[in-house]
Image (cartoon, rainbow, N blue to C red):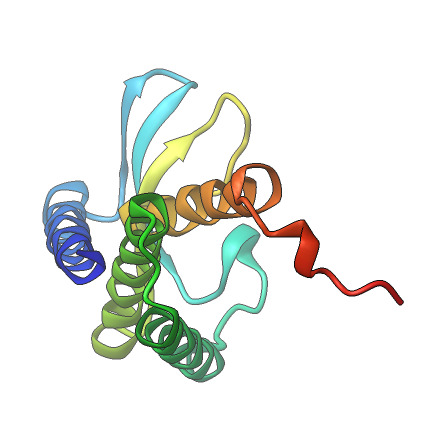
Length: 153
């Protein structure tokens, strides 16, 4: 299931980025003036513009993270649907941005929430961030662990 979700994310992400490249033409279209715009941005860094022009580092880091997630999926075989969905969203988002970095040399971003001065982002970013938050909340507050097996030191 995670790989089907990842494939769907990759397709939607790459399709919306292709639309942004062709339709936004390195400009901005206000959907709600001064609140939400579609703005074409070529991002060579990470969130908030940090580490600009560090594509090689990001490619290596993303590849390592993907390998770790795929390894964990095969080793632990999580049965919880939420974990599988989160893994699929993270894998799909990571691959979506990795495709951009490998073939364009930058990541295409286009969602621009100006009301809160948030960095411009894309579908892949949304999938990675939202699913990571959901995964952490699940692990911290809802994952049932056997407290009888915890070691007392």
